[in-house]
Length: 287
Image 1: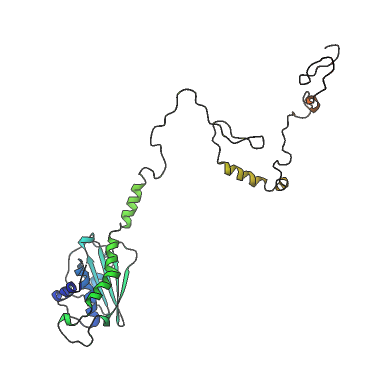
Image 2: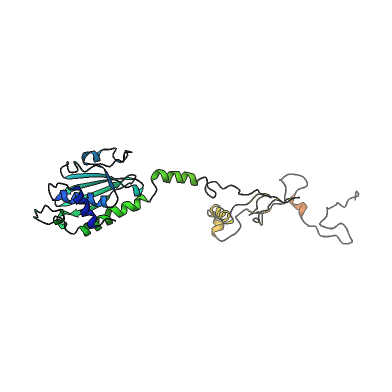
């Protein structure tokens, strides 16, 4: 982590020339990044190119023309300790403040920090000594580290979007994800295997499934029955049997031998005769 002493050491070693107060604070931002392990790969107008972050070049450059743009500063850094991901830092002058925005390569949104120029510079000081021009550098470094540098360090530990998609594609082939397949060979007992018989079904109104078929969930069947019966008045009145539901043991009408009166019990005649549950024979001479 950068300190006020390391930042001042970078400023003294670079010996920059300042045009105004915003130049001083903008260069202090640059010195803080350098003290944190970053090195400069582009600055000025070249740092604002559309291919700055996508460029594969990681050559270190000097600070020449770092303040060639009026009321705006741009720096591109690379940190080999953080995976060599490039970071674009822009500083925009807004009245007496300097607005700092940092965007790491692969990040979706930039990080922002607002600096009040007067809080870190001595007013009206014409001293040429760098240490006599800045004040409260320790608080300056602490705020910049809290709002930008520490967040950049945490984002560099996260996988990029391309790595995430590759890992997700790889996870689809791992066991337990996707379509479930038997992990072991299924063994069946020798001999006769009886098919499963569903436990549901107790009457002609609620018949069960055939043997060898697994019934659906019981609660779903009851729910389906309720949906069908909800329009039946008898069901609304509390009846558990819909109107017209009965067991009909009779055959089709008009078929000889299946008349309804043939299935009635005839009283047993005194003195013998066949049992009333058996076939009723006539009493003519043929019997």
